[in-house]
Length: 430
Image (cartoon, rainbow, N blue to C red; front, top):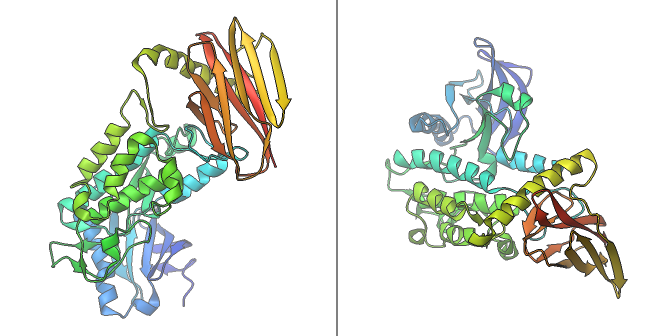
């Protein structure tokens, strides 16, 4: 086997290996005529003389060109090496793929959102409604375009959603707010398993990635339709929200209530029970995330609480800015008492006649579920902020501890637009 980095294929100077699979390897290369980086996908040498594999490999490039959508990775060229290995030249996704981006954000502990089971002692990333819609819009546009010309992808998964940047300068000059940076967008790639259902009976061998593939897709000689892509796209959204696959029954407890019906339908066992089109699928998810609904915690916003929640939102922004500067906003100029008895701790703060008290265990073991309860006479919403920066509202907070250490959970409730009553509850995780 030839080590290609450092070598040249035609006008392409290969720089490094980006990824490798059973049939092909993708390299970062320089197009020496255009002085630009490209992605070079080369069929493995041991498959290069297999007529069927060669046909499918070149067929991928033809299908990508046929879709002609800005939401699908662009193909620039095809060719063959001196060793008769077919290759495809595509746009390079400098920022990697969706799977890698989420892993990167997990390490940075970016905010906001709060899901059951969040890690209290290590920063984790929780997606926002905007993040979900960013992914669903990309999937609806790319797969919708493919379906319009009779192509079924059959292998939709996070690693096949690449991140490209139409304005690379903005990625370095503007801070990222959420899943993607300014100028970045998601494009669908890897049509190696794609099926042109208009060119044949639609019957196919079993294929796809377990956990994302529809049940009927893994059965040999089954008939595939665009419904298999709707199933896989829904599984991607499920993974984005929970970090798990839909096959994990416990992960469903972390799906926000308003989104569950749409995800259940998209993941239905029978193809006829799923959505008919990607547009219908996207509309259902978008409607579940409609304004006025805190969809990622599953709590509808009561109409009479709008002003209170707007005030609390403003306080949270100030709180986050102050935390970054090293101090806390919302003067706690009243009395604060702490009561510890029988393993239970209560922290209480009073300000301007408004009292907020938080009660819960003083310590917990790793893996243990923790319930914190708050009471207040403010009449306003109680907002919880865990040490990762994630937020939610309600009279109680239930979390699962993941790692040992000290977790600081903040509860606050509004007094007026200038301040809040704030309680900091310290939990020792052993």
